[in-house]
Amino acid sequence: MGKVAGVRVAATGSYVPEQIVTNEDLAALGCDSEWIVRRTGIRERRRAAEDQATSDMCYQAALRCLSAANMDASEIDLIIVATMTPDYPTPSTACQLQRMLGSVAPAMDVNAACAGFTYAMITAAQFIGMGNSRRVLVVGADMMSRTVNPEDVKTYPLFGDGAGAVIMTPAETSDASDEADSAHRLHEQGLLSYQLGSEGCGGAMLCIPAGGTRRALTPEAFAEGAQYMTMDGRGVFKWAVRVFDESAKQVLQHAGVTSDQLSLVVLHQANQRIIDSAVADLDIAPKDVFVNLDRYGNTSAASIPLALDEAVQAGRIQRGELVLLCGFGAGLAWGTALLRW
Image 1 (cartoon, helix red, strand yellow):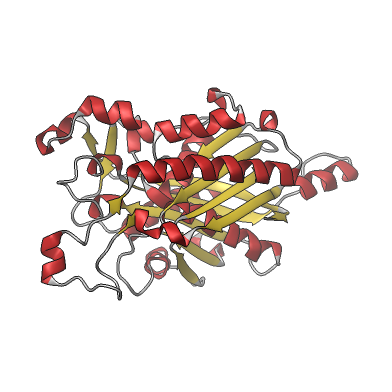
Image 2 (cartoon, one colour):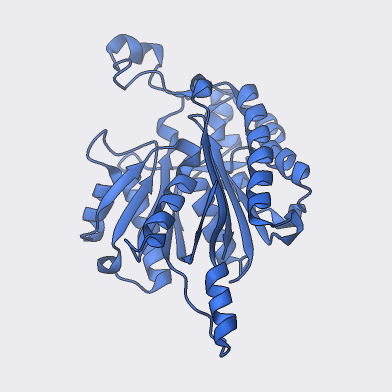
């Protein structure tokens, strides 16, 4: 548990590839469209072109975010990219993005899978809170279509490709003439409460078996399909519902906030049934939960910033409102944050 006062999200941006893959398009692979909708809520997802890499999606999301903030890349003093699908094992995707933007900022990757964006955002807040950065570009991006086996009809339809970005800065004082009111608003803005956690004992529930130092991607492993992600869907479902319920309640309690004070809840867009079960336990009104997984599927680290950008564009978030974020996934890892926008 922790908090970081005096930080804010200055702008958002996002990018998804042009190709739309509907449930009907997957019928040739043996996937049942109605089953996908009934079990997950997903109707379509985006697929990256063969010549695209994760950094290309990061770049487009970052450009849109910089434009929304009316900033130049030269003003960014730290770049953090959350991804589990880097361009290369090394160099980092963040360094690739830095080069593409023409930035001179230090850059690093964070790999916490579907919890990656919340991990990266909280890391950025720490840099700002300590006075070591003033403008941090945080990007969540994953090209999940490259990680799933087309022959796995229960897993392949769940995932899509995309990227989302935010720029975090120190909080700004309000326009109020009353200095006391202005100082109060400044103090309140920020990460009012957050929690990061992991349960490594559940790592096998979401895993890509080959391609690392534990098991090389040999011809035999490739033929076996060990380069693709394996998932215990039922186990992950139960774990995700439990961990969000526990984590969200602890974060709200730590901040002295009740669920009815929340203006918007943005969860990792993994499965509609997970979202429904999780928010029901907190007694959150469905209208206060932002959902776009029906159009994009599970985009891993991109899902929360992609949803945030769409929520901002739709006017769903206003300055001063309380927003609850939660990412959860492979690791197993999770990150929950209560943010005063």
